Length: 457
Ligand SMILES: Cc1cc2nc3c(=O)[nH]c(=O)nc-3n(C[C@H](O)[C@H](O)[C@H](O)COP(=O)(O)OP(=O)(O)OC[C@H]3O[C@@H](n4cnc5c(N)ncnc54)[C@H](O)[C@@H]3O)c2cc1C
Image 1: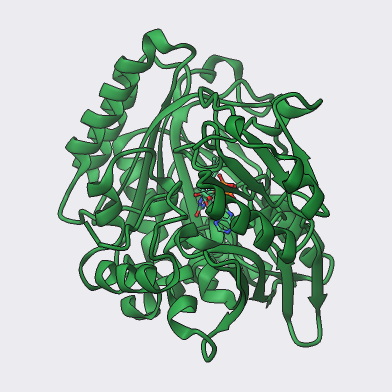
Image 2 (image 1 turned 180 degrees about the horizontal axis):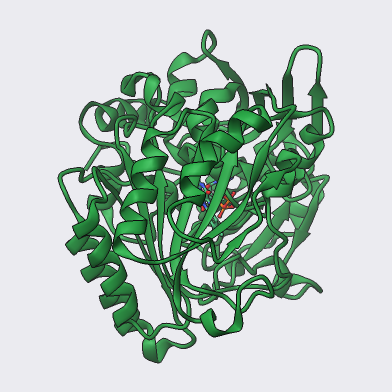
């Protein structure tokens, strides 16, 4: 049922936050999500002010039969934070952050972005591990797992999650941690927004007094790429890397003749003492004369690069895990990137392991602890006309790269169907998630997401 057939004035009366309907100023900007090409018109967007607003909104939607979408940072690849004709519970105005530097914990409302949180924590030389982009919401990122610049040193974002406040499908506000509703706490660490609206997370903070990081750009050749990955795997946990193999962007630090030519555009993140970090980075710098080397002692939050306001790319994308990138695989990656004429195309390679891999796979709903390398493939397209060719390219690329690991990281999935969601939650993880879903959301009220249906089918 859509909101057109109902009045939203009773909603307005019962909430402290703003209700934005299709006739209201700001509706179009409020319904815009990060990815372009997602043009849905919800019946109303509720900028909730507190957990009781969330509870009212859920109850209203449940009673009226209106579909709910939940939005934190709006960066879902599948557009899961907006629904056509439905009610969007938008956490944007809930951005309170209480940092306790003594106890090294923080309570963070889920409308915060990774960048906002990281900047605030950085002023105490503390950090929680989020992803590689400041504008991503801590809501969606944390609920799916969270793989970022500190993944090898401090694990996934969920590995620093201490507790959460959740409003469940019956409108109840629930506190959950390892002792209280432990099943719910397990499920929200990887299982996404299937179990309720999380209004607050409590995170552990880690000291980051010294940090060496930044952009290292190397020429793209099979032996250099394979050696880069081997070095990243052999490096101590302090170093996490994200290697984007892509055409060189027209940045001033890159010689003009290389613009548009394939390079390894790597983000290097060493969370430790500078001198030791320099020693760890030396072998990477020796792989080839760098095209650009901006790696230097920085404050950790500086690793988040500035972002363009109003940037809404349209992209075909795939995610997968691989076991190895040897010279042959590296050659294939470069050949496939060279064969595409998409102006922006990338194979993003993240070597995993370290702290992330030391957590037992059954400890949380993120089941890919032993996966070695994550690869994200993307080709941007300008209009619908070249969408099919970009989709075919990423799809063939994914098939060619597949080795034995069929898993998928839920936060990088697009709208790829139930089989891929199952691959995000293999075997016993799926069985436990569906049992917990039956308990907390038996009618699948929260289904605008990478869905875990209560019946498991
Ligand atoms: C440019 C870019 C860079 C990225 N980099 C990384 C990275 O380095 N590491 C990584 O792990 N991921 C990364 N991601 C993926 C990202 O983690 C997911 O897209 C994530 O779901 C986005 O969270 P969000 O809150 O911004 O998105 P939203 O679209 O608001 O939400 C995503 C999903 O989570 C649900 N949800 C959000 N908040 C809540 C809540 N409070 N309660 C219940 N459900 C909620 C939504 O309903 C939706 O299903 C990146 C994405 C983009 C676009």
